[in-house]
Image (cartoon, rainbow, N blue to C red):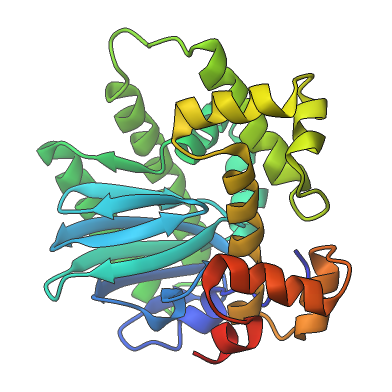
Length: 290
């Protein structure tokens, strides 16, 4: 969304010990938390993070994941990220690539397109020992090249290393694929279609009836099926999407509360405030100031 103040490499590179190339690449060793991600935040780029020590719980869009040693996390542009908590000994290595590089370079490699769909479905993967060594080698090599500020081709070199890295990551994902792929049930397929529909329309439509009609079902049938598959009702998934977006706008944009209310298609600011407080226990203003 154009009005959101995205976190990009230009902001990340203000932190010490970060090596970067303009606003296209950043590579660094993270100890503990980066305060930018204490609240739901959109990262204007792709991020690769490998946990080396300790543990951290993160959220990617609506889902929570556990980072522990050997877990590789990859996120794509426009996803909403949040670091929920972390242990004192948590450390990881990170490579952040701008959305421009993702859009202009990686999609030109047709062989890699299936990887991006897989990453969105499975952003966290536990690596084998040899794969951890390989990712660390890529990190070290890229870090050395990014530091060579006198090299006029360091951006192109970094892009080449990045492409090689993504090919290796694709091979890792393929190697971690279960021997027999479990086919989804009809209800699981319905859940996937429902989540995609919510992602497309939650800013304008918050009624279960709208999504049920779109999927040619009754609201009761839809809610029962979604609850059975996910443990949450259809209404809860819709509400979570709206609240997640509202939190991201409140914390990472300069929009007024009235403008956020308009952006999310509430009838007025008062109705938005009541909706937000009902689901979070605080007003939009209180959430923004905490």
